[in-house]
Image 1 (cartoon, rainbow, N blue to C red):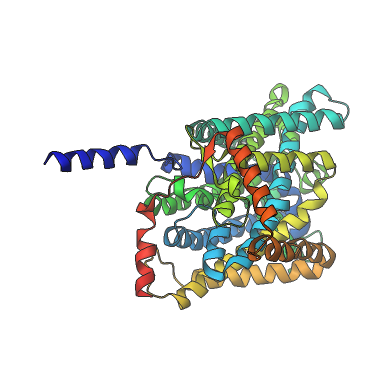
Image 2 (cartoon, one colour):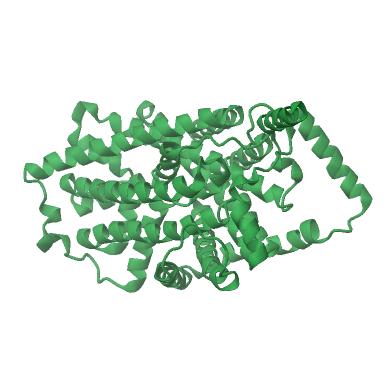
Length: 498
């Protein structure tokens, strides 16, 4: 009996001493991650682009509502994939599991090289511009000042994410509430304007007066602009292994967050049109600031502060989730193994966070980051389509796989039809940009075959990698995490039946 008790005690203590990613993301934090990543700088930038391509107020509002609906379709597909393949890493993990290493690596390569560092750099620059704008009322903030403040912001939030998962999620929770309150302020002020009778631009007879003849190509471009504001809806899937009871909380967070964001975005645009004519909105480079100047009077400073808070929370969310992508890629052997290690005490992926931070600062130093946004958008939507096509392929290839959530086949098919139309018109409208996006992605092919597929490298290469890894471990105080198989047992057991 004593032996059994001792064995039980040893098992319990070894389980508690394991170095694993901590499950500290509950339902509230999960919703905050989705909402916090979606609501960033997009809602303060995209309304102008959506209206410009839609050609009328009415059609632009329809685009905003439908954009949220498309996100909901994609989110439902990702909910099924997230609980069927319960690994951190999102799109990358699913595509690697379904289509194999090369396709997964290409997605990882383009995301780590361009997609996330560029997006982080743009959001950080938006943050620094809005923070510095009150000090430079009559001119643009200095180039060096904006870069310096953006770099300080990135470094500070990297330190927070390295120090504690709980700190990072609490920052996300607080700033998500802050940015929602800022948008609620816009909505309330807009509704007051409507109650006072200021809604000429929203009357059906006026709202559908087109400034240009609507075409499928222009509507597709309007959807692309709206999609930029909605991007980030799939980011909770990047941290699945840190979600408490992911099979319950992952879909619940999606069902709560996406409709809420769609409602907030639509009402925010209605509020904009209650105080601005379409011409005024198109002439503005900072819609929320123009809105504040027109309606808030001496309190107009609230709007640039609100945008700064919104983007600060967005940077934190992107750092948190993109570092987990590096972590997942390294764990699969597609990136250096050092990036798959976590801190002994804090259980945070410090090497992966440092790589994301360095890549972002490098892109900040290059200069013009906005030119890369089109490449990012194309690669982003390419990855969405490939991932959801993978869901259909997995249904056919492994029909007996345990699926705690199983969406109707109409959901991924409807999303893929929309995706194909959007992508085709993007290729037709901007063939050079889309072509360069494909080139960036395909540069990963030789890297994959040399770095990953080629196993018989010279011994000196392996020795060099070992030394660098050992040095990195000592500097960052990191080790390989032990896997928690409690959430992956259904997937593993189903392999025997397939």
